[in-house]
Length: 206
Length: 217
Image (tube, rainbow over all chains, first blue to last red; front, side, top):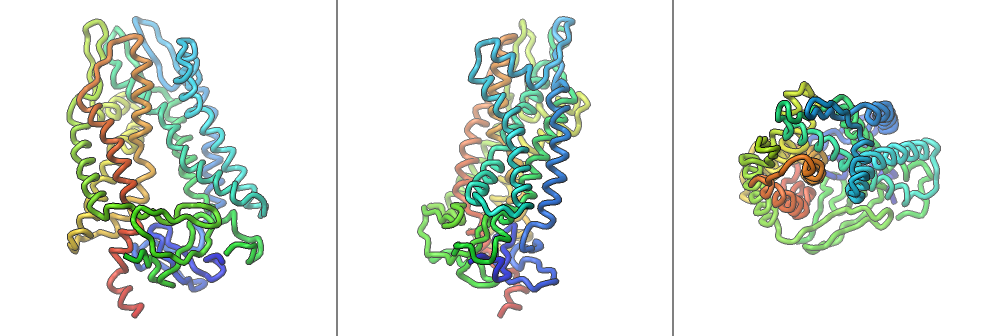
């Protein structure tokens, strides 16, 4: 038995289970937030945030995230050049970490959300458990992509020694941070319960 | 304690899974046990040991470590005798000074402001509930915590420190400041505090708003 079959909604903020009256606005008597059966406009909002993230993904990877000026030489660093730097210096574990966090995770996250949205819109009855797990992982790992933004901030803060060396953040870092934030917001806007909805009232779940 | 009749609004013993919407009748749960959804395996309720005292102690420790992590030098860089020092806040300030205001705000929220607000809010609510004080805004503060928590990224920041450290080690000598040690300790204490606190338990103890509780009787 599922809550929606009995018009029961749990509050998104505090989890309180409430009986909804159709067409009537309900606010949670415990935490005060608005209560809905499902996150409002979940599919539309998730698509919007996801498409915005996809649009930012290219500039995030192409534009330099920082410029390094050292003894008169200026050099621009992109996300990938950071990975290549570590590979060249034989630091492949670190190269792998950066590549996973900055390139692979955002890409897989956007693919996962696209797949989840399409499967929900097609009302797919398949692999509900795996899709729920996919959503859970997507929500969990997204924040680790922020690591490159922190690297840029720390290096910019530390390397300010005038003519010897200066590191300045560049627009790629802004685009990259937007990708991370937009995909996080997209994952938050998605309602995993939609995966389990609309397959007939009784489908073997208790 | 028979826990938690969280769902006072509809049926006292029912709770719906937040990931698949399956209804569950809550069993009596002992501290240290976790209740998972039988359909999708999501964690429905984590009932930590140590009552409210353990998260209070851990969040107090986190608050002290947070102060230490912010007032001393974080990292010092030494290039041919010229030293450059940064604090935790310095990372955000550097971005701001370089004309990257938006990015400075993002780093400020994820590395300093977010965790600070979570620590302060949790302590406020925990102490209010534990000492049975009628503090104003308990509900609002607790609902903030759930919205704020995903944006606190101390652990990710630490990975960033590690990467910067290796990157800069080639061109300069790095010195670890006192604040960095405090920061590393903070990450562990913060994670332990978060694990020791089940917000649903606090919501249950706070209960319904007075007017709503009256209306339901």
